[in-house]
Amino acid sequence: MFEGMDIASALFFLAILLLSVILHEIAHGYMALSLGDPTAKNAGRLTLNPIPHIDPIGSIAVPLLLVLFGSPILFGWAKPVPVNPYNLRDRKYGAAKVSFAGPGANLAIALFFGLLLRFFSGPIAEILPGVIPLFVGIVYLNLVLAIFNLLPIPPLDGSHILFDFLPPSLASMRGFLLRYGLFILLFFIFFLFRYLFPFIDWLFRMIAGF
Image 1 (cartoon, rainbow, N blue to C red):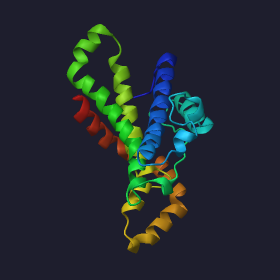
Image 2: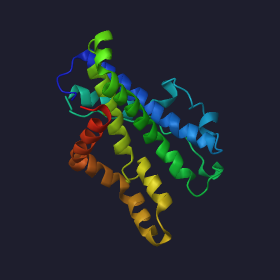
Image 3: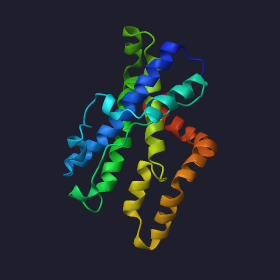
């Protein structure tokens, strides 16, 4: 969906991507704070100011290269917010709650703009001509971020959720994933990532209605 876009649109989607990954990280921090861990707050990471969140590679270099090389997908990441799991009041599922908060924020953004598209696309198009494709991009980008981060592969959020629910009898699986997670993730990105799109397309249709 990003092929052939002009420079202004590319910059817009880069800005939306940056804001989306920042909100993703802030959500982690606020969930941790609500569970008793002020680490992210004390580090000044519960702010919309992009500077503390920017990762030079994930927030700038990777998205920019994807746009410059005409990639059909666009993704990136911000600096992870610091969390001290020993401060969490919920010792059993606290880490899972903190981990889900990031993708949950992206799903909330996708739902908000997707439902606007479903119920108010006509009036929006009349008032703000040309904004509908931008809303479509916001929904799609945030669905990609949410679904990708929920994959149970370290260091993605989904792995921390999985580890909280793994029984002790599967401790060897946790060790395997921690040891080889980065290689599994790279393999997934290069060879399997495209298989997520039918599911993301279905989610988009369910939310936005087209």
